[in-house]
View (cartoon, rainbow, N blue to C red):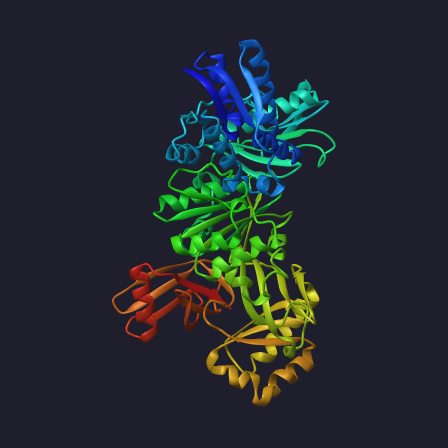
Length: 602
């Protein structure tokens, strides 16, 4: 195509389309006219240390060399735009000036911008519209990766290093010689250029001294002076994609994640596999016919197209809030929460009824909860977070459950010190590990030390047991600290045990020197030692033979955790019941139906 006068806009210069067309002999040009506004905008971008500014200036330099080689005229025309016009380039101020030049000079406008081309057509300006073609080019950066590489670390005048292995088991190795500043700039510009071309590439954050890019499955951070003391590029790539089944969750935890947990924190130190687990969790929920969305900065989770990924760096928390509430996802993955706005957005969405999974950096499990303190009220934490999953070395090292109770904090003894306490327990064992509560004007996180029963404490508990047995025939006493016990008493006998205005309990406490918490015996707090037995159902009787030497011992019988009766074991180790009795009928029916029957020796 022969063109006498050509006016390229900024998009053509940045993408290098004009020089490619000239070099391939697709364009025969008499004169190229560059508006001063293009040069000013590129200069502004370069002064901001943005890669597109440098790419555009390099293209103009290349165009100057081509003009001398191919014998066409290269001129700069038009008035330099004001600082305000440059700042508002995205609103069309610069594009308008370029169109005006093409119109005034009866020149052809060349653009890669659809809006620019349509406006030019409407004004009758001849145009060459070059739609960007996505051609995936091999990156020089990719040459530093192999199948075992987690991340590569490039820095000018320093040998290239890589982390190889998997989360928790990796080595830091030198993989190449030193790179010069020119090498670093070339690699950085190739990354930016490729990112702008490809559908799977995003410039997530661009600042004066840094650029964060997501390109395919690479998360790339480019740092340059003056922010850093030299050029630096770090690229991270997941080496393995896991399904939730590959994490070998216990049935209890799998059920929790699948059916109950809706405020999950996935915590762990950097590089331990938090995002990989969040990815597996996202895909699991999606396969359960749940609507799943993610909020990321940057968007680096590798997810199927059915899951929408939002970049919070490109929108305000209010915008993300509105979109999520209107689109009504079942679960939202928030990767990663860093600042107060992120934590507030997570809390607000959770209180709105959206299932939330938040990813946070933490060196131990409770640190993840502590990051909410001071940002939201203590009382609503259990409504926002119910489960904490701590990831270490690529697997789940710890699962915690978060609840709210009104109780006397561990270590305190006076009943009037009871208050709302956030309890953090080991999900698998139910062991209390931390308590969070208000103490004065401060919110404190107190580790609960594992209590070990010594001979003195055990003797004191036995003393309490004997004293309480004067008022009830069904009581279970267990130590909960060095000076406190919990007594489970039959609900019908609690009044008699406590006494009028608590007189009986106070007398026992004074006598044995222990504080006593009295709670109803619900059946789950079974008394004594469980024993194996063999039942035999006859025509009139139920015979139960106990395994072991329990002659003349008293036992308690439970069905599905509920207390049924006390019985005495005969000299032959046998318990005989009438089938027609109330208790005998309950136990026989339970045995026939396969229900849980337990016998506890008191």
